[in-house]
Length: 60
Image 1 (spheres, helix red, strand yellow):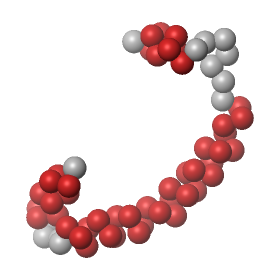
Image 2 (tube, one colour; image 1 turned 30 degrees about the horizontal axis):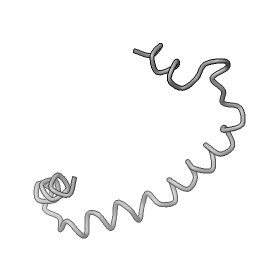
Image 3 (tube, one colour; image 1 turned 120 degrees about the vertical axis):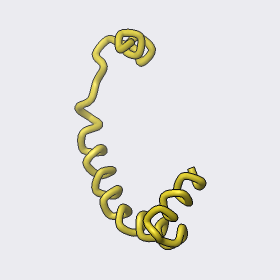
Image 4 (cartoon, one colour; image 1 turned 60 degrees about the horizontal axis):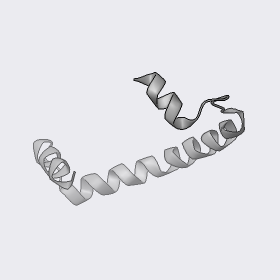
């Protein structure tokens, strides 16, 4: 993954550290908001009578 970031940073003429810092800084608040929304939804999510394994098999 770091190699891919390095290649990408070179292609857009930015320092790898600069690219990573700007990415994590901008996304931190957004990630906290997403986490809060998922916590709100969690009680309403159910597989019914299916186990996770059964749901996975049905999805194949």
